[in-house]
Length: 601
Image 1 (cartoon, one colour):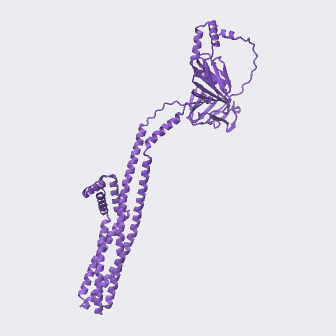
Image 2 (tube, helix red, strand yellow; image 1 turned 60 degrees about the horizontal axis):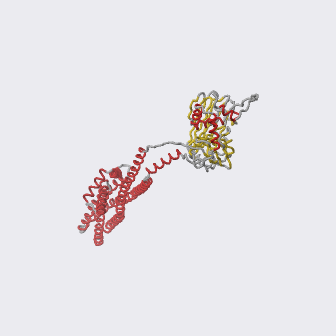
């Protein structure tokens, strides 16, 4: 505990000085230097001319004293020099007053320039109280008792539920070197456990120091503090917050080998993903081409339907006309000749239709699709790469059986053609039914055509011809009705297959989008390892900050080894009753009497 903030500053100063000066002084006393000899040495130093300014680096310890609410009252800078020989020190700082803390050497301050005529080598400390009250950080401390905000004097000696909030942030009014972004903060507060119970301090490291609880907070460079402390208090008093600003001299070595290996694995995986997506896109393109080819054949087949329907209607009309004109044999012979000509054309059309329908049904199967895909692949490899048909066929078989993408395309195609949920099996079944119906139509029409031939050969027998015509007309009416159903059904198949074609087109578009995305992903991650490594280095650099950013006292000071900040808020204590003391009279000793008293034992 320190009675005043000056006690706190002097104590910290003693620690920073070390033990060198005390040990030197003890050696002088133990050797019992004769007073005369010592006096001669002092006189000699007094009459020696001053040497050229000593080239010495310095350190600064900045003491920021605030009231209990964090408002700065004054700033003292203790300047520390290590001298190799006597001489004149020149330093800079806009001080209201200065004092030599270690020797009796004279110190002068004029227009921001400080000079000290140092009589001997060693360490020298001088304190300067700055004119400015601007520090790199702004402190704000508030106190609440039982929920109401109170002043520091109002909570001194109080009892109840206490909350203390401390905020440390960047001071926008400060225009010196950027200590805020480069210095870490260590804030401490000690609370007497005989006066404070149920202490809650989130984010603090709490340690026992005698009967006190010491709360410690750490803030990295570029970060402030936002602290809230609660406690049940009685007869409350406390020392102020002590906040040290120091550079972080961290020797951080990050072993990022495992991380970078994972990053490289990710890069390789992205490359494989992009390559695989490319293969998938190629497979879907082949599937799309095959579906488009089937669609063309279906539309071609559908185009024949109109001709068949019109031809069938014409035959039906001709049969009815023959029935009506049968008694007129001349007219009948002419019409029968026309009938045979039309029947021959219809037979040719039905034969072509049956051939195309069978080809469509055979091609719209998994095996047919694979055969077409293989034929297209072989043709492409022979034309583009000069590979023989047998080798190209072997490459396709190997790709479809062993390559992951090949197996994916084969399985996808197999499911597409065989799954009960897919459109293909329905189309395939319809095509097979269509082919079967057309085959039946072909067989039936072959019988009809034979009958027409017989009718032509048997025209001499009118009764036989009339019976045959009646039979043909009756049977053909049924056939004509079936032809109408066929053309209507084929139209529905073509319309349904258009939906399948649109779906495959959407899949192809999505595959292209996916390929574009994986290609962009591959491009963006090409330098991922170097980017991650640079970010790690940048993060470490930001944590460590820059310890050598200049002097706080003045930018004219160029050789500054270190700067440290000690910010202290005013303690909170109950008023002390004043006790009148009687003045003691003492005899004032002269300088030589005080000097000689040093050597009395």
